[in-house]
Amino acid sequence: RFTTLPGRISVLYVKQNATGSADGTSWENAFTDLNAALSIARSINQLYGIRVTVLVAEGIYSGNTSLSYAFAPVDGVDLYGGFVGNEVYSDSIISNRDFRNHSTILNGQYSQTVIWQENDFVEGCRWDGFTIQSGVSWSNNPGGAGLRNGFTLSNCSVQNCQSQEGPGGIEMHHATVENCEVSYCTTYEGACGGIFADQSTIRNVNVNNCTS
View 1 (cartoon, rainbow, N blue to C red):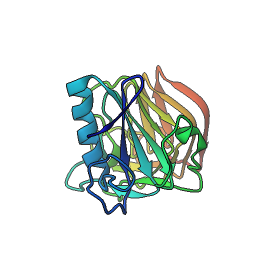
View 2: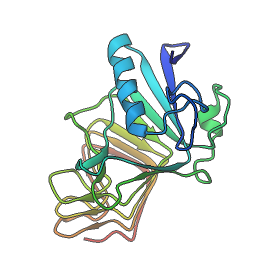
View 3: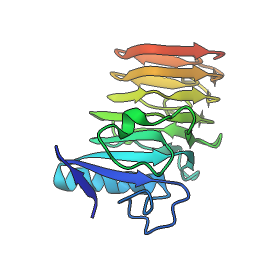
View 4: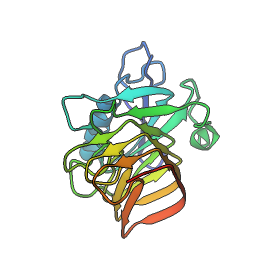
């Protein structure tokens, strides 16, 4: 029942206050749980070989605090935040959104890393238009905000994240961060408060008020 567009791309919708059937097929019937959408997106990609785009409306999204991370990126699945939650799908839906005034917040609740890869490497995975905040890493997870290998983060704000030993904000290997701001992130025993980058690309990124 998911929507398939030309080029074999499937679109799923996530909206915190949606009241429909929660099958992700429209804003009205959007998933209210981002992890539920990621799980279905993974299945679509693996079963049908279809690239999946997940559109996420403004709001605050959190994960299961019994885990060390809130969200895990998925191969072949791109996430875009910053939507009002009533836009009609078109080729320009992503370029026309106003993610600065319609914040889609991924919240670590000061209890877990926000984004953490279950596998060592993801390919072609893009998260775009999010505020990533309140992430904490007290274990081997990569930074308070997270990320890691083969990942693209674009048009995002990373703020108020902490780590015991890793970077307070982002750890990235063979990854790309572009058009982002990293602010007020702290590491207590590590060498980098903002971003640790290894064989990665950083474009137009501002790092402010990060401490180590």
